[in-house]
Amino acid sequence: QVQLVESGGGLVQTGGSLRLSCAASRSIFSIDNMGWYRQAPGDQRELVAGVTKWGGTNYGDSVKGRFTISEDNAKNTVYLQMNSLKPEDTAVYYCSALHYGTRYWGQGTQVTVSS
Image 1 (cartoon, rainbow, N blue to C red):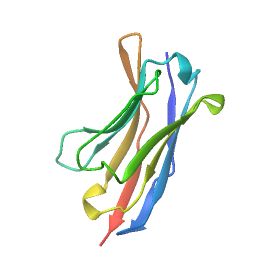
Image 2: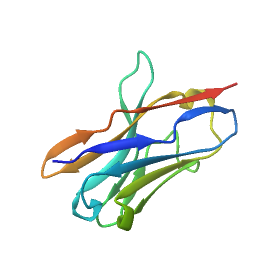
Image 3: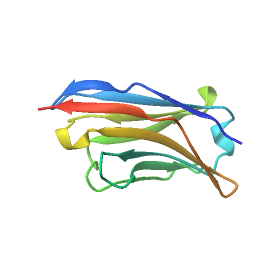
Image 4: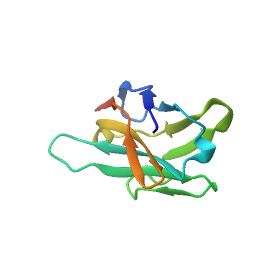
């Protein structure tokens, strides 16, 4: 089982930056895939960025070139650096882990980008 705790959300102006953190309850080196998803009101949850335990990364089209996912294995933490934020990035951001075929979710952290 994997517990995930997100932090780092908040209110930021258009063009600003935020860094989200996701602390896992076990070594992320053993987790097949970790990622960030987001969900705005009335919308489906969508992939923002993902990273595999082999270091491969993938990004949603709307965030490519602006967001970067990274990990610190020593701290069992995955980060999402978000730059050049836009109002359409406003959503609840969820950390996710895929481990032995089971997907785990954090509680979510709100990101609000003001215009």
